[in-house]
Length: 193
Image 1 (cartoon, rainbow, N blue to C red):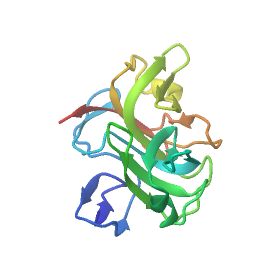
Image 2 (cartoon, rainbow, N blue to C red):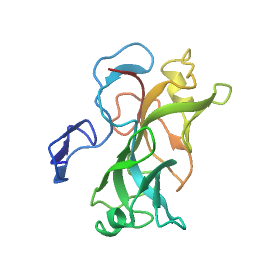
Image 3 (cartoon, rainbow, N blue to C red):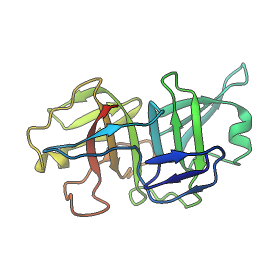
Image 4 (spheres, rainbow, N blue to C red):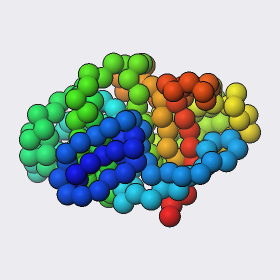
């Protein structure tokens, strides 16, 4: 990949990873009431921006990298050539089988509760009684978002983009309610193109 621009994984072109600007994930356009609705036009089935939570090497030599509860299969070389470890602030993206297609170190120090995190993926479960949903292994607390749209009901299988903060390593991603604040976070439903 030559560049990641327009906010994290919004636009991806070329061949060879060269640069990144902004924050966030997805190629989404359009708005609607409640959670913003856009169109996901990426070749990726899931993506995340946040700290590496785990790097696990299996007996067969394969490596699994976990970022915001999303697990991606890769090779030891992919991790070693970037000199990455647990806690490093990265952008990752993968296909439907969980194969890692993008692994990019952001070069900034990750600060829990302050550094923005993002995840794009399908909702695997939701509990509207407490305002939480799961995307893979990530728990998202969207209860503050209900101040903006009290009728929002997430559905399992729905493709969403979530932006917020993660106050505790491995903890819930928190979405704020102040849509005007740049760090408040967002919850956006996406339709595949």
